[in-house]
Image 1 (cartoon, rainbow, N blue to C red):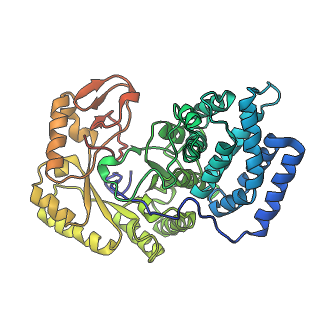
Image 2: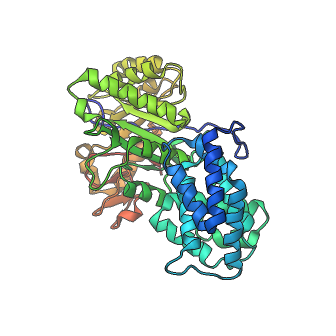
Length: 459
């Protein structure tokens, strides 16, 4: 992944409390006012489908991370959204399904889901409330819940946000029957995000690769509360998430926007391989990355940078006093972890203060380290994770009990982080049991023989 050892870093974080979900900005820019009128006009001429399609069109024409605009536009269109919710609710009450040519319920909900992906918690709540207010308190929601269920496959991010917000608002309004019906497929949306203040590493469930829409969707379907992506430059000079996967890659802005909308932790694995032999250009690219992260509005408690020591310095310089709670993940040097190594690494804690620091070390370098040395490396401030370089741990792979035993020893000696939750289509060792299917992998210590790794859950 990153640094001379080729390893990523990972560790624990907490989220910022943020504003309450009922608070929307009071300053309405003229653009939002104009666009709200367009949505209203669309409803008058074409009903729910036309209004929601126009709303989606306007939102997606703006930068992916312009959450403030989207929230304000949703607020300005609230009267129209209430009409949309009422119209869809009538269709539920009268058991009116879409025709093949005119998908009013289907197209309206899909459009609102796309809007929810660009909105902040305030906007997501407003969308859910408009739908909840219009729905009858019935256990028979007909095509409404069918569309949301289908959305879980085609657009899982939208389903989590729109379906979840609707459940939350149905519960808040006392429509228990309708809420119970939707909750069969959709968890209530927590507007404070999926990664909470004070959560520990043992609760982290990281998606090790979310560079493509397909992989990001998969992470959402699996309920990950952290997403990890590999930052590269595009040929046209922009930035994208890329680790040689097939298919179209997410732009850096798109990737950040999705993580922000979901309220998950985002781990930027800084690669920028195009500049690996040009430190001047790489420094400029790293600092541009930092600017985009700051501008995204993602709180520092949900951010991690996976970097080598030089890149950590560049990031510190670019951040200044911004994002003081963003974590720097720094690779320990190759070689056995000794008291001298620990003392040398402590300087990174000082250099990066007040930001949290996480160290990552190879299994072979830490396997014989004493608890005292590991605690010296942490120095009461940093955390330590171990990477199961497949070459290092291969003797243990054939004996699951040895893997579990060694994991327990590492944890008891002070190692904070899991090692690898990469899914394997051939073999995964989970909790001391061999499993055949990749879908079963969640808390594995060792899974597959690939080099990419992720932080994850301790058993």
